[in-house]
Length: 433
Ligand SMILES: *Cc1c(COP(=O)(O)O)cnc(C)c1O
Image (tube, rainbow, N blue to C red; front, side, top):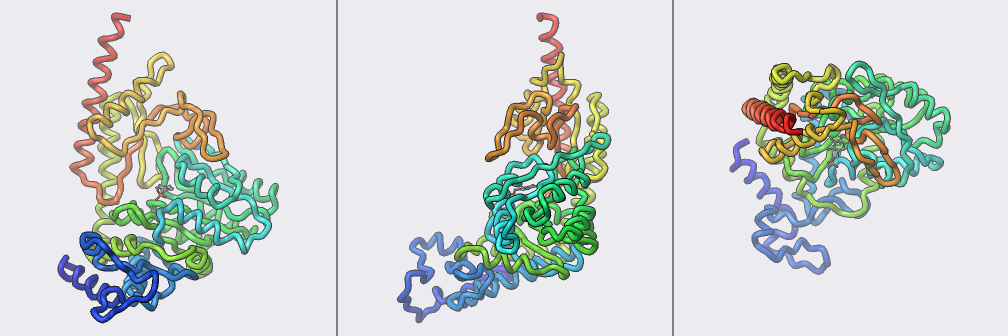
């Protein structure tokens, strides 16, 4: 759709909300009153938000337009998920909270069904939000360390099984796995976890944060909920659909649809309509063909980014870590910058890149990391590398939706210049020492 048509539709929807009725006189305390005209315009006069006290997905009689907007958005989001490769899809709910908070809500919604459960078994991923999501829901996380295979870190299936047996399935609220993650971590082996969760009758929540943009990760989810148990997946709206931060998509399979409605009912109170509005406008702007094109160019971007970073690594005497299971993120070693056990050089390169306006590249220095505390959990070493000690110092880069080929070229160029500049400085300094 063109901009005028999208705006026309949003204006039509807004004119169905009671706060915009010409004859409306409000006698309540929640009448969608907006003082500042700028704020009214910024929100397309949509002021009622979404939901009712009992259910964030419920229709609001005072706001027929906003209620309709939510329904259309959820349906279009579901259609976008199917186009992306999530088959046998059941209910889909766009929520006005980002990924971490939506994971918390999801775990909270499970609570009444698991009266004896205190634990969430969690396959380690070094992203503080994931662990905080478990803690905020009031559960104790059982951290399952990953196993290394070549350069790659993957799910320890046996350790998850042992943990469920040790605790007793009824004391486990859920197993939480992650698909999209920074290399050298691989997506969790969610098909095997799903089968195990089915055997033990333990819920399985999948953090599919930026996984919607990747066909193979969506196929992995489809396979997991066909072959085993997946209660819900949670994905970010900003990371997958190029909208401002603010929303998440909660989805479940046709075979196990219940948790989505439970989460909608758990949500206390009304919520902002912003996440829906941004997503609706974006999906109408793209249309199905635009969305498919965006997905396709990301897949191509991944292939070319890999090739370009691999060439760059070779020219610097470094290497791209072998992480064949990760279809989004990759990691390039900085081992030549480690001098006599000191990894300061690699961190310094990180700050050089930051100063040169290269964002999103993280330098990870597992060998020299400080203690990191996330809530009640302490990681003495290695935090950031998804394990206690990873033998390479590296930087990560992602081929993410909306990224451009020219950006990758520019990043490679700036990275190369920074690396060479740093080496020169280091070379000059050495004779004086
Ligand atoms: C981004 C991300 C999160 C946190 O998402 P928020 O939207 O900031 O809550 C959690 N897990 C993973 C794997 C992520 O990439």
